[in-house]
Length: 303
Image 1 (cartoon, helix red, strand yellow):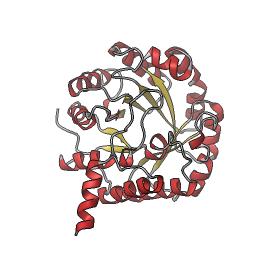
Image 2 (cartoon, one colour):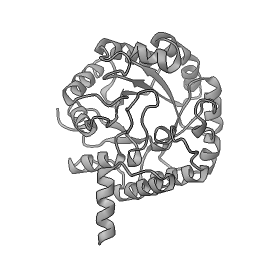
Image 3 (cartoon, rainbow, N blue to C red):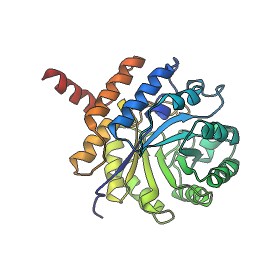
Image 4 (cartoon, rainbow, N blue to C red):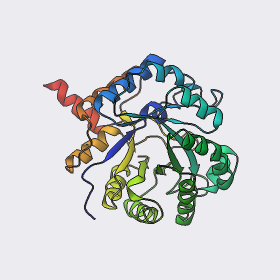
């Protein structure tokens, strides 16, 4: 299959990237980050999470963040909404797309949200129905599609089962996530090919972590299967709090460098993303995890 001519990159840094930071990131900093990402040309930004502040205190200011950003005319701003209360908060904040999370691993589901896969997805039915009733976009994300920190291998049948369950809820897009970063290129091709047989390929997305340094190889493998939506986090921020050692979303700058090098359009200004990565890394005192970002920044500063 020929590679896609255009790819949508979903920027998850403001939510997935920052949610596990121990020190609270100032609301103004979050707003500035989202504004910079919007200005860079992203059409989909995961901006907030409307969950209990008890569980994710970093995301407690979602309403204030959404009230303070400068919205792009074409941009979709997404938020994690695990229940109706979160959904109502997201609606009040002007969120464009709500995100529900499941897992392909029974063990991960039990350890993460204290219930099995079937029950976890059943819990999302009211949220899905409410989103559809209001004409909002609904995205489903599936954790541990390539491996689980608790049970090891995850059967492909389990991944396909969860895809079909989320599709039945009316999800507009479904994310196939490598939560602990163990996927390999050949495994990625097999999973994406199978997923494309039960859900529209153009509405599937790849969410890869770089724990084993394989994220870009996996993205290329997914591109070969016709996948045209990918998630990435500016400066490589974030990871999974439930999977020991599984830190590091793939860096947006690195993904854009790959895509642009392949002649694939994204509509995103890589230079502006590099500056956004430098901004947030400096603001929160983190080492910038993007290799392309650091190289391009060094090159810029040396000229």
